[in-house]
Image: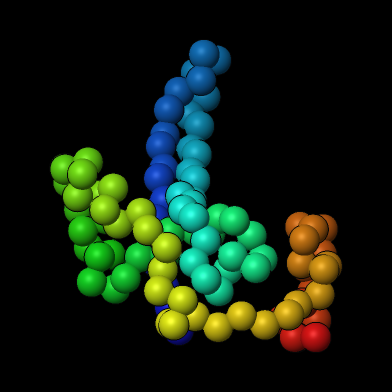
Amino acid sequence: MKFCVAGLWESWKSPEGKTIHSCTILTTEANSLVSDIHDRMPVILRPEDEKIWLTKLQEKETLKRLLIPYDASFMEAYAVSSEVNSPKNNHRGLLNSL
């Protein structure tokens, strides 16, 4: 299954003249599924909203209306190892549920 999260990116020049590329994933309050894990979650866009998010020159208010928790009924949660909390860990075993 694919899904799209709301994010922002920018390229800018540092005072030293180096081009810096940066990005962020936007978050919102957690839905009922995620709230047991954390108080925030990424803004997951509904398929019908993806083009709206990616279209240049949208009104701010139109975009703000998309920054809501994703419908929990379309999600599933399962336990994983606490090893996933560190970027040092990168092996196939992390894909297995407990």
